[in-house]
Image (cartoon, rainbow, N blue to C red):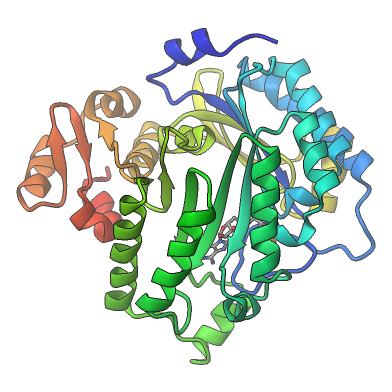
Length: 392
Ligand SMILES: C[S@@+](CC[C@H](N)C(=O)[O-])C[C@H]1O[C@@H](n2cnc3c(N)ncnc32)[C@H](O)[C@@H]1O
Ligand code: SF4
């Protein structure tokens, strides 16, 4: 295995390169979730899926012309339902096709209800060095309302277990839930800040079309906090996490001690990534053009396609410079570090309209330091409107 050092320094400006692997299965479907996740009561032939993932990764690696990913991310669905041997097969395939540096960040999303020590240790032995645990809440009544299969005690135990096995552990919580008061959230988040590691993803509940929560919301049977109340919860989140030494480096992501997720930073900095597995998205430079890829969402369709063609692509769309530039803007302005105007101009083939930048800056919606622009904390909740104003 090679080391990352050269790669990271030469590519510091272009966002870097990583690999995303999607595991599209869950034990049950949570009522708020619109991720590509499927329940298969008859079980899943993991060896067959592992072979197909290895084959698709080899194909996509050959298109990309890339080497040495700085990060690998197993997302889902519920990747902790993978057998450690499946994870090992996929990592070996990545190493064969791309060369997996010994210091690459290798993250796996885990669900507390599928946690067992033997599997965590197996993931670690396979090479996983970071776990992102979907705790969602530390209150039992909220976990029931969210349709989760675990209670708070199980989540706490899973977190402690993971911390004993993996060098880096993150946890996800969902807030701005129906009926949640600032006092409830302060209590829950304060406990989490005491027991968590150095990375937290704190998501405001979004009502996604096609979910059970969406239908209930439409029918007036599920009421989420109004804008003002949600803004109060967001501010409280910032106050409590900052007091605990966490920096909000992205809208929903908080880290201390340099534990930002390298893989997620790659997305927000406009990097390139292979997206393998059913329903995975990728961004690759293919024959000099940034290209968006997406695979078949239904696992069985994806599997059949990979076995027939070596890949399960449903879409392969070359992105024009306007689309590339808008995406770079949208992703970059999610980050507290913001984005570099010269890097934008290189991607867009033209500079950002500096009059619009200065007008937004004079009204407090952007802050500018030299060639770098960012959205100040006070304007964070207006991110989408600010990006719309700037987009080409
Ligand atoms: C792919 S999912 C989950 C990983 C794992 N299957 C689990 O549920 O623990 C990644 C994260 O997105 C967040 N999420 C999913 N749907 C959401 C929604 N509608 N609103 C806010 N956060 C959501 C959850 O915190 C979840 O842990
Ligand atoms: S939140 Fe996680 S466990 Fe629940 S359906 Fe979505 S991916 Fe599956």
